[in-house]
Each structure stands twice: as structure tokens, then as C-alpha cells.
Image (cartoon, rainbow, N blue to C red; front, side):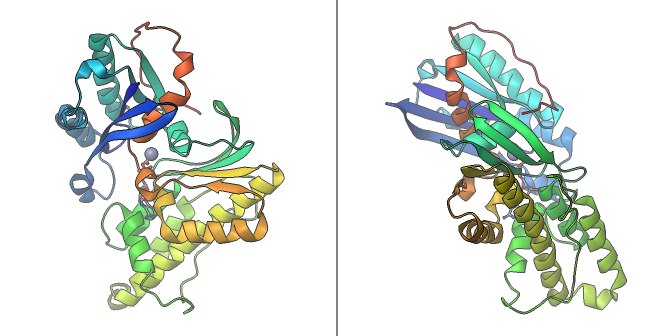
Length: 338
Ligand code: KG4
Ligand code: ZN
């Protein structure tokens, strides 16, 4: 069985093709056309520009992803239909609707958040899922495939958005996460930073987050420094380390608390921010120390950020729900809930 997946929920045009043989998944292609350079000058994603790029890139990305097969070999088409940027989502969904109709194969709509989770192929439940990306910061209690309860989320900015906005304040490139992580590493381990940022909502008795105040704290600190100092490498690196650590501290505290409170058997990570090396390391240490009997799943870093392999895997988990070849046009829901 060959499944094609498409994701155009944000600024990456992604198409992947997987083959499933004896329940084993084999990635035949995984093509991502990134728009990072284009959006860099705006310090974030510019939706109408992203839509235009998807229109231009999707046919090319699709052709590359399928160049080694005959299109008639595709058994199933899957596409992200939300949540995400509405004009962008429509590009993938329109393309998938047409494709499935022409090939006369079923079409499975995929929830982008669920795809970030299912890319781990989870098996041990109940689980706490932490999904941290540019658009979302959510803690989800998962009882099984398709059984989710949102227990906490950000009240304002997402964790990835905070990385991106802090980077912008510091005059760094977009996306902020990778560059902040790189500069934070340049501070000697153990040397204390003179900058202290808040850890928003860390001790509140809920599983919600708030990162917009953290971004504002970065801005105030930056503005309060003489211009020569705030442009110095040392200041920028210290700020990168402190903002990264503030985000990590809050995420670790709330996730471990949720894992203990709900007595889960595993923790599942997903989303672009999980690519952060320091976050991975500190989470692993904390889990081993505080809840050593809890399993954890973290995707390989290349499957943390947006890709279409995760869309195919999510569709594969839901393949039974498509009982027969009954082609039906699907729609977009930019605010789709898990
Ligand atoms: O999952 P994703 O690719 O797209 C969304 O669904 O939003 O996540 C993108 C986010 C961006 O905000 C980016 O700054 C962040 O993931 N990110 C990182 C790292 N790599 C990407 N954040 C921290 N550290 C990283 N290494
Ligand atoms: Zn994503």
C-alpha cells in the first residue's frame, strides 16, 4: 500500500510518499520546500506570500515526491486540513481533493497537531503529549489513538513564536529557535548569566502557558541596556541562553506535573521546538530523575518541524475509518481542535 501525504499548513510545502508492507512503514520520499528565506525579512510568516509560494511550489514538490512511481500506484491520499493558516491550508486541500478524485482513491483529512503526535507511532497509554510549535503549545492527555483531551494550552503566544519574536528583538534571523539555540551554546556551561527573565505561570495550579510576557521582558531588558552593550556578542548570547532556559523551565515543570497528576505511562513530544537540543537533553534528564518508569518518545529532529511523513503516518493510523472508496471533497478548518 502506498500513501501520499501533503502539508501546507504554514510556510513549508511538504509532500511525502510512504509504502506500507507487512505493517512496516518505508519512506519512499519526503520533500519539503522551505519558504524561510522569503519570510525572514518579516520576522515571521506572511500568509498571503506563503499562499502564493504554495501555489507555485506544490506541483513541483509533488512531482519530485512521486517521480519514481506511477501515480496509479497511490492507494490513498492524505492532507492536513487544519489547524493552520487558512489560505495556506486550502492550497494543499484543493490539490489533494483534485488528486484523489482523478486517481479515484480515498482521501483522509489529517489534524496537524495529531500528526505531530502520531509521527512517534505511540503505543503506551495513557500518555501526556506536549506539542510545541510556532503556532501551538498544548498539553494533551491521550488515552489511545483518536482519544485526546486538551488539558492545557498557551493563553497567548506559542513557545516557538516566543523564540521567533525574541530573535527578532535581538536582530537575529527567522526562525528564531535554531539561531537562539546555536548562540545559547556559546556561553560556557556553568557561567551564570546576569540576565534574569520570568518563568510565566510556572507555579500556577493549571496546565496552561503564557509566553507573551516573556517576549515583553526580553524587549524591556534589551531597551534598558546601553546600545553598545546590547549589540555585544556576550549580551546577545546571554539573552539567548536565558530566554531558552525560561521556556524550557516552564515546559518541563508543567509537563512533569501533568505526567505525575494523571499517572501516565508515557510522554510524547511533537512540534518544531522539540528540535531544540538543550530542551531534549534537559527533558530526558528530568524524566529519568523524577519519573524513571515513564517512557518518552521524541521524534528524530527532522520530523519535529513540519513535514508530510507525519501526515501519512496519521492517515495510516486512521485508515480503517475509510471503509470503501467513497470520494468526498474535504474542507479546511483553520481552528481545527484535536
Ligand atoms: O512545527 P513547526 O515546524 O511549525 C508549526 O507547526 O508551527 O514549528 C516551527 C517552530 C518555529 O517557531 C521555530 O522557531 C521552532 O519551531 N523551532 C525551534 C527549533 N527549531 C525550530 N525552536 C527551538 N529550538 C529549535 N532548534
Ligand atoms: Zn507544525
